[in-house]
Length: 154
Image 1 (cartoon, rainbow, N blue to C red):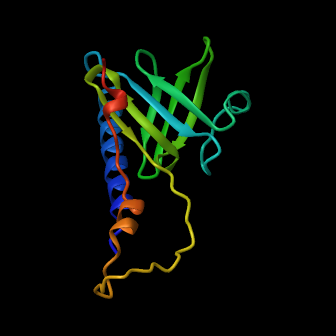
Image 2 (cartoon, rainbow, N blue to C red):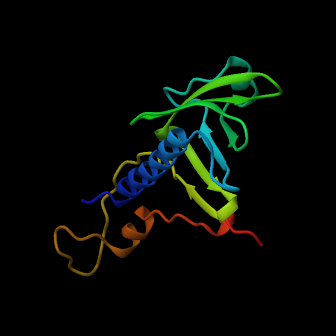
């Protein structure tokens, strides 16, 4: 079975990786671009200062805009130093920890759905089906839709 959801998420993470690498190479954001990046603070490999983890035990949103340093992008994620109340702090964020990525200057946004694995239950159908086919209900339940409407300006 083709896992379109995982393939789509990999492609979206690849887009973010390329974008952040371009910003790292340039050393600054072009024009009015700025990013709101929300990530799971408990995801393995996330490294943030303890005081930030205490304040944001589940998820955190960072803003990459005017001041940032040491943006380094790898295949697995990125590290960046941001200013929190005149205190520069380094952050390491794996791409798999990302929940949302938004650039409000151009009304662009991505949301990563985290779906927990479920036990497969046998499907029953009254109509005969090919052995590899799935009932329409199963297809709808597994489909993942990324909605950009919530990021559009009103």
